[in-house]
Length: 252
Length: 91
Image 1 (cartoon, rainbow over the protein chains, first blue to last red):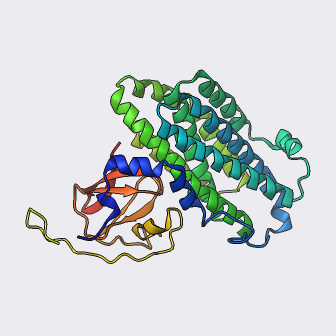
Image 2: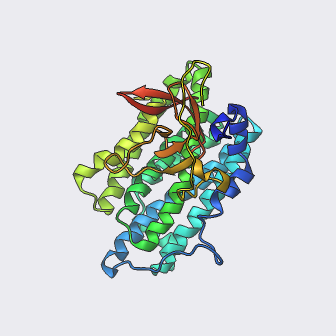
Image 3: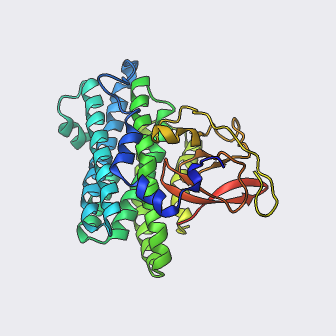
């Protein structure tokens, strides 16, 4: 019989994909590096520079939030495998933050914090405050839902859409980030899917949280999509990919 | 390959399609999805509903098979929806 990955037991699969060695072997070939893969040269037209800086400000806020959130979640994670996975996620978020700030500097931004103050997406800033409250409260499922389902799905959908129309250098950066986001979304969805099976009351609590956060998520989408100048008729498609994730978990 | 039920499954030699998001030895089990209009799934392939990557097996897939998406760490069962095989997330 041919050896097939899909013959692995579910327990062995979960253990493997949440390990640091799996993470390292997964990311090693798509990270930009001095001696290996390099980013393409900058071909951004000068007329689009200012718009891209504004968009990158939103991404920097999102990744800062994700880094804080992933780090804070380690404390309330229910087992060692989840803690180890979140450690790999925190490393991913830190790398995203670093490379996005580097891109802003390439575009001529000398004071990143000053730009964030004037260009920040207000919906995202409000989401950041709420996520911090949830992670500080130490409620694992609520914080994980906000971080790894809602925030990650929002980022995944936005980055995926943006890279289709981005300059070559920004596109290469976003492609790398999207690859990481797949793991983060999958971890959140799978953890919560199992928790929802164990706890009948959890679904109603997370539905309320989703309704509360939807205003900020959809507002944030609108703000970023306007900056990206994405036509109105394409926007429902982007929101759909976010809504698919929450609906698979039963929060239609 | 013949199953206990007497059903025969086609076998497939998997090749590396350049999917670089999982460790090298598992890359042949995955490929990028090109979209509804440009892509057709083979009998040994299923689309991951979570991250939209094509999951591949070395044998023909049937309803009820368990498959894994390493790109998003999801376990799935193969189900048939409107005549097409799809992955249903198994939490």
